[in-house]
Length: 245
Image 1 (cartoon, rainbow, N blue to C red):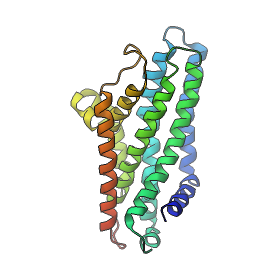
Image 2 (cartoon, helix red, strand yellow):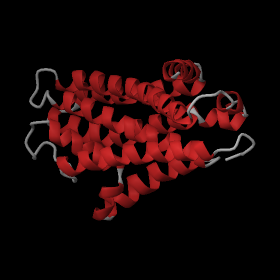
Image 3 (cartoon, helix red, strand yellow):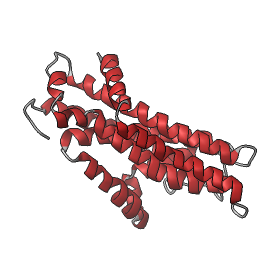
Image 4 (cartoon, helix red, strand yellow):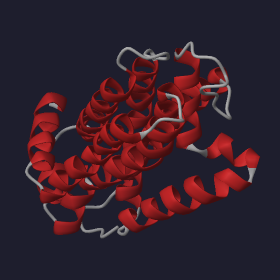
C-alpha cells in the first residue's frame, strides 16, 4: 500500500501551484551563479560556491523552505480540507501512511534542491578548484531533505498552523539563534547538513569548513530523522477522524 499512497501523494504535490513557486525559488541560485561567472573577479569560485551559493543560499533558504512547503502539504493539506478521513478510514497500518508521505515529500524536495545544486555548481565550478563540492552538497542536501521532510510532516500532523511554526523554526531558530549561540548548532538541521557536506568534500578548510564536525553531524541527522518519523507515526496513530489538529 505504501507505493500507492506514495504515487498519489506525488501527484497531489506536483499539481499544486506552490510547487511552481518552489521551482522559481530554485532558479535564483542558478541566476546568482551566472551573475558570478559574468562579473566576479576577486572571489575564488570554490569559496563563493561553498560559502555563498551552496551553504549561504541553498542550504540556508532553498532547502528548508522547499521542505517546509512540501512536507506540510503532503499530509497536512488532507487534514486541513478534511479528506484525510478517506485515507484513515481504510484498513491499513497508519505507519505506512507516514512512511509514504515522508518519502513523497523527500522525493519532491530532493528533486528541486539537487537540481538547484547541480545546475549552479556546473556554472560556477566547471574547470575550477573544488569541483567536488557539487557532489558533496548533493549528498548533504539529500540527507537534509529527508530530515526536514520527516520533521515537517510530523509538525503538520501535530499542529494546524504547521507552516507558520516551520517558518519560525527556519528563520528564527536556524537563521538567527543558531548563528549567535554556538551550542544551538547541535539542534539545527542546517548545521547537520553542512556537517555532512564537510565530511564528503575534500577541499581545504580555507575554502569550506562546517561549524559541526562530520561524525556528530551524521549521527545527529540520523537520530533526528528516526525520531521525527517515529513521532509522526505516533501522532497519526492517536489521531481521531473527527479531530482538527
